[in-house]
Image (cartoon, rainbow, N blue to C red; front, top):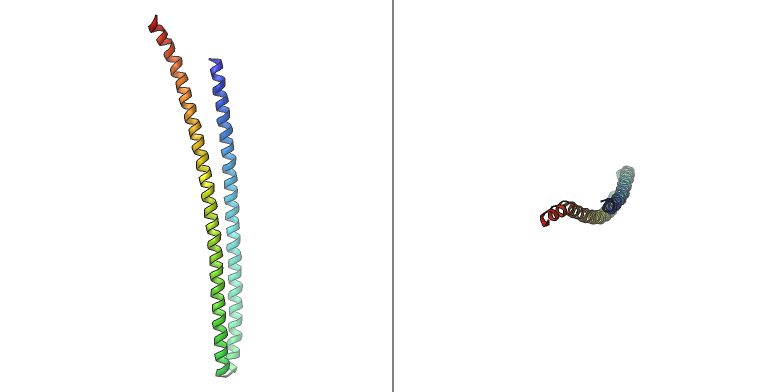
Length: 156
């Protein structure tokens, strides 16, 4: 009985080691997720700052344009309208670029999270298989230790 317990203890130690490895990997994944969240928050903050700066810049430019347009003739008004249109187009392009970059970052984050989730699910499935095998091995051992004496008594 003592010898059969040793393989069980070894297997339990292996399971505990596997559990610790999974726990460490999960901690790493959590750390990576937290780092990604922090990075996304930083990016959002930077984008907010850029937006405020752009709004301030646009406001300043708009005030300057209104002052000049008030003092100039219709020819300057036409030219200024063209400049304003160009600014709007450029701003729309910048906004589109920023949205594209944010979308790309989001896609990368989702892909990385999916990969990490898949890896974690695989590790959990492996652990389940190991635990299942240990359970059936232990069940066989217990049933064998009960049935062998009973069968021995029947054969006498």
